[in-house]
Length: 122
Image (cartoon, rainbow, N blue to C red):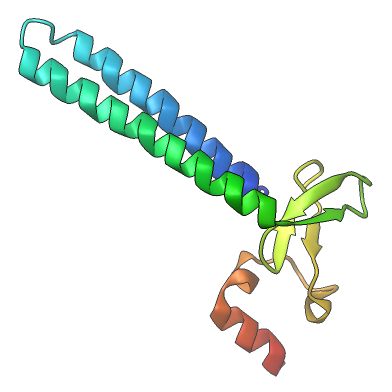
C-alpha cells in the first residue's frame, strides 16, 4: 500500500495531473488534423480537463485558507491540517487535534462522520 500523504498536497497533485492530462489529450488531437471534428473534440476535452484543474485549484485554495495551521511536533515546521487526522506535509508525521485519538493508530477513517461516533463510544 502506498504511503498516505497530506490531504492538501494530494488534492494539489490531482489538479496538476488534470493539467497534464488535458495537454496530452489536446496533443492527441493533433494527430487528427485531417478530420477537424475529431481534432476539435480532443481540443475541447483537453480544455475541459484544464478548466477542471482551475476549479480544483480554486477550491483547494479556499479550503486551505480555512485549514488549521499547526506546528508539527516531529520536524517543528508549520503545516495545515484538514479533518480530525492528517499527515504533516513535510515529514509525514500523523497529526490529530482530537484528544480522544491521541496515541491511537493512524487511520483515515477517523475523518468520516461514522468513525467519529464510533471513537466516542469506545
